[in-house]
Length: 172
Image (cartoon, rainbow, N blue to C red; front, side):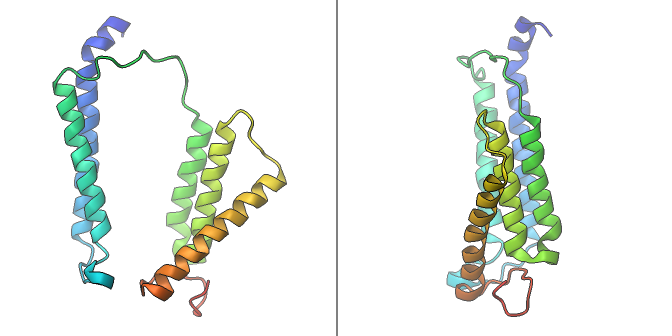
């Protein structure tokens, strides 16, 4: 498409993005409907956050469609020729997929730490001055464990929410 043709279709493409966001919100709401609503701590059940996220995404989708119907983002800057960094996207996506696949096998702490390390690696590699040595890997691993472990303990020990653990003791 020529630049002029693309500009004339821009509001339609923007509305299509809004519809996509609405479909994702609908999918999340459908998933939340199948989650138990038994009230836990402070009367909030495990389906509360999925409902909040689906409502927020739904609102964003409606706002995107509304903006597109009013002419789209007319004052949007032209694309500067920057290309997406696909290797970083692959690192971050693999981290999330590994987390979902391994959380019941290696426990919450280690699967979330693995997710953090992969995401940090993707972001570091996207920077022009990325640190790639063993020290950088070690820092990412230590920081990941320092975040994931207290979160796990807070949810399991203080809030009484069961997360997958590695041992029966409840500390890993």
